[in-house]
Every structure is written in C-alpha cells, then in structure tokens.
Length: 139
Image 1 (cartoon, rainbow, N blue to C red):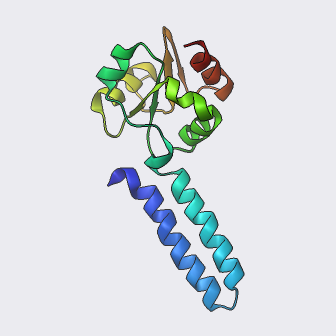
Image 2: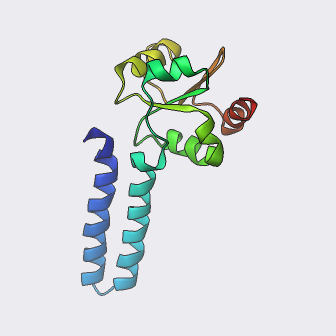
Image 3: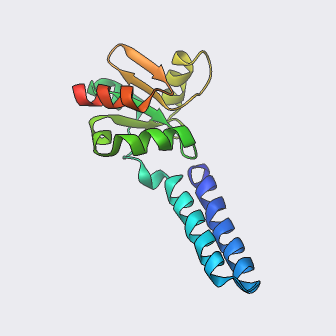
C-alpha cells in the first residue's frame, strides 16, 4: 500500500478539487485541475517504472542498477530522462527490498537517498541524467 500512497493522494485531490471547482461554476477549471492531478498520480505511481528486480538478482546480472522508490521526484526525473534506455538497467525498489535499501545506505553514508545508480565500479547518488544515460548506453 505504501507504494501507492502518493498516487492515491493525487487521485483524491483530483476528485475533490475537480468537484469543488465544478460546483462553484467552473467546470472547465475543475476538469483541467483533475487532469493535472491525475497525471501527477500516474507519474508518481509504480506503473511508470520498469518491473522491480530483487537486489540480489540485480547485482548478479552485471547490468547497471537503479535504486528507486515511488513518490521520489528525482527518481521520476531520472526515469523520464532515460526513456527507452531504462530497460538496459535493473530497477530495485528500496521500499520492497530491504537488501536494496541496505545497499543504498552503504553507498549514501547511511542515508536512503534515491535515485542511486550503480554501474560497474561507479556509484552515484542522484546522478545527472546525462551520466546515467551514458552508463546505460555503454552496456
């Protein structure tokens, strides 16, 4: 359920604000606000990310690993910047995988800061999207 909390909050806000604005005589504004909040709900949902891979499987694959969590705007930015290249990495949701969360804490000085990308011997916390694209292109 924790994976969907932010998305559900946006869905509820879309409904409430859309109805309030429409009942106040602004149906177009209500519809626009609802669409914006529903788009945010989709963007923050786990649906936009590739399938979760357990950390042990990701580490054994030899592919770059992206540690992420739902609701993280920086993870969303990285995911959207990678577009088709995202399939060239393994995606580990640290909320679903304690071993993945531990790997991030080991890299990020005890913090669970995401996105954290590990590519070969290089590991970056909240890397620039250009760096991540380069790492995924090389694999």
